[in-house]
Length: 148
Image: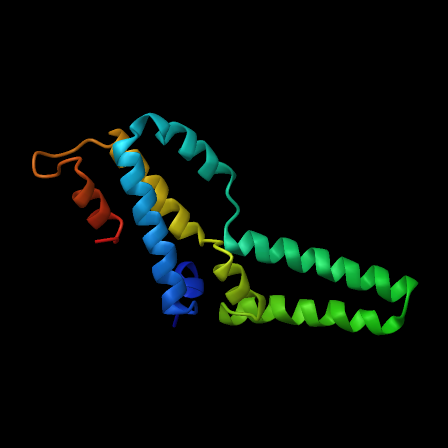
């Protein structure tokens, strides 16, 4: 059984996950060298939409569009709303639906992926009490968030 928090990532093509991880690794390296920008990046992360939210918003938009077109143009557009609802149900049950690979290729991340970046940035900033064995160096932080 797939854990809900990881099901999108598990159903994403490995090369897309690798690209998302590589981009995250590069951002963390950048902020390790430019810590004065960490606060701004954390504020940006607060506003970032995760892939689930984007999927839900798009499904609602297209479903409403199908209903509007069905009532004003041609009843066959109601089928579009039904298809969108089926995709959303499929995602709820299986953790995958046809729009998901497109959204992942566009760079939309899971909540867990966004939180990994937030954790790494906070560690770089020094938010966590570090024991004597845990240093605030880049390789330790990358290991802690599963990027090394």
